Length: 171
Image 1 (cartoon, helix red, strand yellow):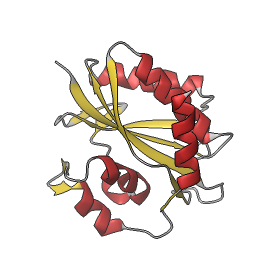
Image 2 (tube, one colour):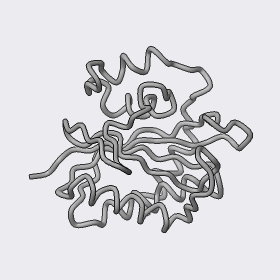
Image 3 (cartoon, one colour):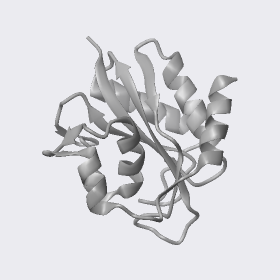
Image 4 (cartoon, one colour):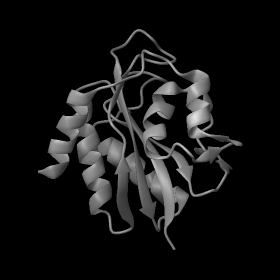
């Protein structure tokens, strides 16, 4: 049986839109994954480590027969294929893919925490997620309610990047 999962994508080095497209195509081509709704792309200030370029962020829903651990391995493989090098926490990156939700499961294992442990603090994650699953309940509150609590005008939709992503996915 397939499980619905929500993934967050982020990047601020190189060409994040192309990196998102390549990762989404990789997900679409995987036999155990069905790509679902995609959020628009958002432009967001850096979080945690602020002396770096703005990020682009988006979210995607998938259905998968992979376990959460197998999905994590796939996401890490897609990050590496996108040129990701893990040098510093919250530092610049070509591509970051986080598992935000995995069905209704709460997972707390080394290297894998779902729902993502800092989701309620991050408007840059919640804004795209609210576009594709606003009524999803996380820790007793809907995504839309979580977003309203941390809404930030610096997290803004990037229609040019969204259109470019759509064009790259259509090729």
